[in-house]
Image 1: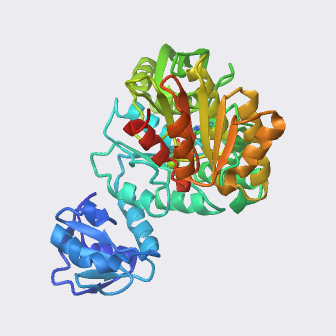
Image 2: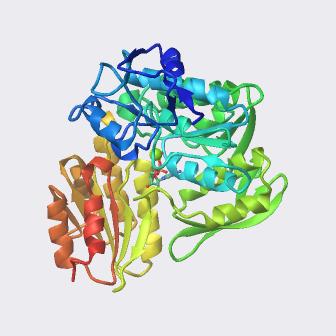
Length: 461
Ligand SMILES: Nc1ncnc2c1ncn2[C@@H]1O[C@H](COP(=O)(O)OP(=O)(O)O)[C@@H](O)[C@H]1O
Ligand SMILES: [Mg+2]
């Protein structure tokens, strides 16, 4: 960040200085985890349900922090505010307003945000200093922290914006007003909070509404609800997609033995071949979105293609394919699960397995509200229709998949229900063979990454 004094920060966030001897002390970095504290840090104390950051003021001081941002005085010099996250948002806004040479790119959508964010960063890094968050820093905490990690050298600031309800994206846009806004897809993630897909579309559209007339909306021409957003923005539109009408599009799409896409990238400036390192057809729209951002910001088409082709997945547990030395292939996609991403992952499973035996170890897709049973039912049927040989359904919330697989015609041990990860491991330990391909996928909270870890740890026949 741009070094800023405690006095200035207190002014910006309307805070009171408590126990501060020298208000001119400079803050060089802002973080909320004591492990990230370096000398000169401002430590953001968050009061969680299990731990209270204020109790770590001492530890932060020992690691070199110069002050704490909290809701009450602590053992260390503290800027006291009524609401830490609101204060952090104000500070981030103050900071980004000083970054006059920085282009802010914000990405939203029901799925693919993190993948697209990583790919956008890969493309933009080829032409200028780029800051983008690790993993999914996409909320009212991670986003301002990411903004504050940029400095005057930062040419591009790439942000992921997530929403659990109306107004969330609008709020994130008020913290970091975007110059470029990317809308990937409108799906059913967090349907329970929103109520309907059109309510989700409305919330996602807050991003394009926040764009200035001189900005760029990067829209997915293949998603009807995203396409409608072109009328909601003052910015010019760059379309990406598979059809000829899109500015940036793919053509001649094929897949290699690991289901990685190969295609010809077209932009108004030219054509180039792309060979993605990411697994699955679902990576293609995310890559096209990244290409569209690059093209809008003047990156040459062949440079975009080279960047996309060499970009390795940066964020964990998203379609991580690993082949054990004995041949067993594990697809770890245990980071998250929505109906869209489970369908995509199942197709990759079949593509990668070819003639080999395929397993789908699936846990609950959370936050689907009233449509939960129907969505799990549909996945159970798809597993059978795709002829995935073994389905292991993990956890009560996912049980409708198992029931549906039975109704769709699976028999005997083709589909099995287990209550927990241990149950899944028992079946896998007993029955997995080196020639098999195993997909592991669920919402993060289901803990299925432990299944993948154990499979790869080699405690298997
Ligand atoms: N367009 C898409 N359609 C279906 N699944 C997708 C799409 N983009 C990404 N995915 C899958 O969704 C999961 C989450 O991807 P991620 O990039 O982390 O999305 P987000 O940040 O929006 O949660 C992964 O399994 C990924 O392969
Ligand atoms: Mg994410």
